[in-house]
Image 1 (cartoon, rainbow, N blue to C red):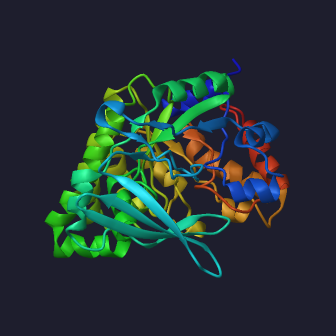
Image 2: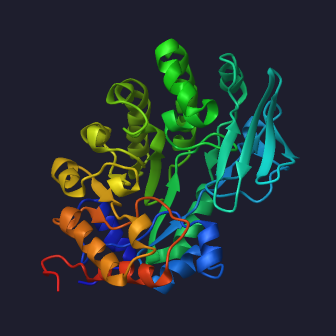
Length: 392
């Protein structure tokens, strides 16, 4: 039976065997779509290459009963950003700073207890934190007392899901901190403090680290509770700062799993599937990641891209516990190679992880440069990977 894209990916997410290998991609960067795709939308990209599509939708809403409102000073939300939620005790101000190379903005979180400041820079591809919000240990007390907790706009999600239909799955992510944050508690904290400073603090003042993680976890719990009834097919959690190329298994056990695993359980309780995102090293953490009981794991980044994943070994170790998403080396096989080499790389992924289902072919995270000819080869060869049918 031929499946729709949505049926195909949901079957794989539930560790079943679909009609063929699902083939998709991770977040599509605006700079890539503008430079290589003539400004195409996400939907137009998926349709052009006949991939199994993903609709990312991240609408937040204020809770008027709590004196909340949308930030009137925020422009159009950026990449992976939602509309900010303010109240009388928490609002964001911004100021553009002169810089010869990058767009540079200073943000101020204004509260009755004080002002927190951060500086974020951007280029045409992405953004990064230059100066984090948390500079003193007591800054987290301001966050814990005053920061707003966004809620999901369930009606907006359901409208998007209805319009998308069977074209693919609807995907969201656990809320991150305002301006620049991510889904996992440890990852969110690293955005607020700085990754190196967070790692040092786990040795110098672990109780402070745990207090910050608890503040961020409680904010995310409010968001998860608001997800009830939302027609998401899967919610993204985690982040690359929790990979084994950044922290040790010991730090993962003490500062990641105790905060992220309960959120996965809560997401399941409100009816959500969960994909745990780990861009970077994964092999020393595979079983630990699966023990948190996500429905899927990504990105299975190969060594050629700075990760460490042996896809076949990962499949043997945790493939019967989670759906695996990713594993394809987009740095080497979506640009500056031949279509035949791209097709061979697709087949290697399928042979390593595709058997018995529970695998979605996908690049290991997003990309900024790629050839349309090679994307076509990637998508076409992925569609040709059928269960029980030998490679031609």
